[in-house]
Amino acid sequence: MDGLIIEQSAAGVHKKGAEILRHVVRERSVRGETTAIALSGGSTPLGMYRLLAREPYRSELPWNDVHLFWVDERCVPPDHPASNYGAARRELLDRVALPPSHVPPMAGELAPLAGAVRYGDEIGEFFHMAPPEIPTFDLVFLGVGNDGHTASLFPGQISLDERKKWVIAVKGGNPNVHRLTLTLLVLNQAQKLVFMVSGREKAEIVQRVLQGPRENLPAQLIRPSGETPSWLLDREAARLLNEKRRNGDEHDTFE
Ligand code: 6PG
Image (cartoon, rainbow, N blue to C red; front, side):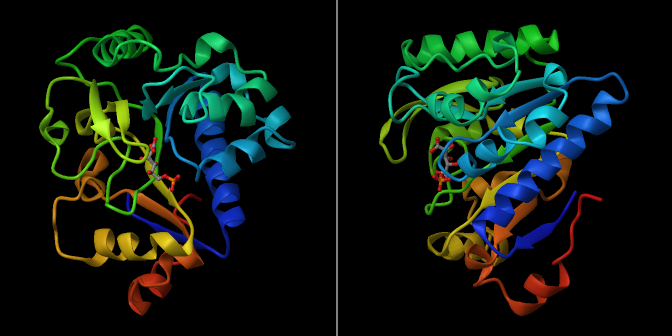
């Protein structure tokens, strides 16, 4: 699934992200299926979480059919300001009728390796599988850092070569702390994967990842089911993309 979706503003990105999530969940719910979604960390998705916690999404979404997972987490307790789970709890989880059992946190308070093992077990329990099988998330949201990292997969780190484990412990990023992250193995198994990026400061990395030479930046290694993922951008983040790419693809790829 390819697709460049350019919205006027960050608010437009959050709204489109919420609509994509609603589309996927409803499509599966009418078939009696649950939806497993892996959420990115960082600040970009928070605007989408705030929207999902308000009407109409708050009442409209069949939350009982939704299972939320984490793309990555900083190895800090959930009440720490750097906790991705903590931020999502404040903005979304505590405001909607999502059963707590449907959103197991990555145990940031454990020792990193223990946290990675624990979360791998959580995923295995939900999907009723174990390596070497690979779980397929129905929808994954990712962000991108200015160095081209995504999830907590950082340029040049050995984590990019992991081909067995689903969840690993790494160290890096800003804040430069121990982190847990889904591996490329799992991310590239996703049914649908959407990068959500907004802001002027991301224009350079967006252009480098999408139109620059192949540098094996982590965000360039994301190819769910062998296709290119969707990029949901605001105009500011898309401003350095060349005209053709920017205009020719400016349509919604989620009917
Ligand atoms: C994290 C994220 C990370 C994030 C990017 C973009 O835990 O830091 O998962 O990969 O998505 O760094 O972050 P912003 O959305 O804050 O720009």
